[in-house]
Image 1 (tube, each protein chain N blue to C red):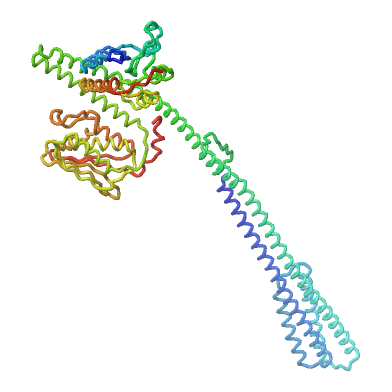
Image 2 (cartoon, helix red, strand yellow):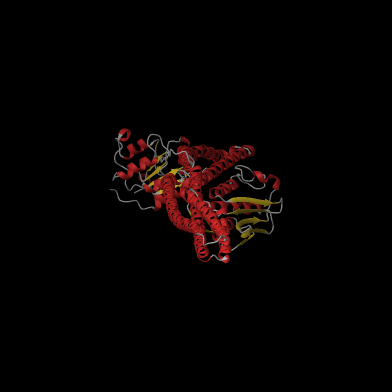
Length: 147
Length: 489
């Protein structure tokens, strides 16, 4: 697998956060293609190749970065649906969110999140976090075999 | 009727009955005594009459002067007896009167015999007259004796009657007492024991949580009053319990709202800040070379402010969490906890030279997490405010104050003016300038909340430039109940 085939799905509704996250990827020299979806339903459509993404094929991203507060279906709902489907049950998913509420962390891990990272206000810290995330999940981590 | 009144009536009746019985016994006893006195009197009369008879007989036979004197003496004795009669009534009195008449008659006849005895006794007429007188005297005296016997018999009957009366009166009194006792006992059972048993049942029911239990005691006495007060109390309890439930429900709702509020704050308030910080940095990074010093400074200020706002939000959320958190009371090792916190602080600032002294084996019963938050804030403060002191010393210890254990955290740092102490524990209240000692002013408010949740008291003493001491007094009443009092914890 080369770098280009390791794609990232960023589920994020806030444009600013999308821009900042992409900037952080760029500054961390993560060249992987990033697909951005704006809400939970769109995320599931993308993953399961339905609706607007019916023609994109079954190819799955290497990593899903999931915000919790999303329109229509929230992040925990997306995670639940992903884990219920054999295709995405083992797909590495990192929750990247503003909240550090205990209930969210517990719910996230209970539903099978692989990581829970809080977005810091300080962009320098955010950058550091995204960099570490990218290195770990896209380079270091051994992905499970396709189902 | 009040129980008090009933008791008074019962007691009065008992006493009255007793007085009546005592009086009856006294009266019957007096009857017995009177009858005995009558018998003695009658016996004396009989004895005197007997004497009289013998004396008269002797005189009639021998005509001696001695017998005459004796008759006189006996007559005087009889007269005294007749003159001092024992209280008599009915036939006995009449018998006595007849005895007196006969005695007087006999005495008169005796005088006549005596007078005629001086006359020559050979005279036939005289002798026959005397013989006639004598036999009349003898008959009179015989009659008198019989009547005296009758009197004695009469007195003995009276004694018997009186004694029987004593027995009857005593018996009746006892029966009356028994009756009164039985009635009192029945009344006591009906009016006191019964209602008390119902009250007892009611208290048990209400204690078991049956708020709707009512006695409906109709009686007008004290126990009825008590039952009505009890009902009123139960109603008041029920009302306040219902009110409590309502406000508890409101509180639960409020708590839920607060929770979702802080959830929103946590999510939504921070993301614009992130944008401000991130894009300011982007500007600095991408266009920094085209900006002058002032523009770069402005962007740095925007970043600093955003980050400060982020910290404020985090600390406020922490404060809210302290208020909401469910208490899990357990034993907490304060000494070890303080050591941990201070070591961490020292690691974060290895250039600082701070000496700390921690009393050993300090333990307190509280929520580990909240106590740690409080201690963290107190020690972080001590650490911060000693940053401008050459020989910084932080002490964590305990002392006994009026038999109560008090824990304290003291430092020899900047201290503060006690005049502003009242503002110390309010959120966002600061006693120092940001440029001297940075901070948000939420730390001590958080400590205060932790203490409040535990029901402990928190205090401080300080002087400007001479360090500060914060002390808290854990009361033993910290119990798991507070946990339950806190709806939706």
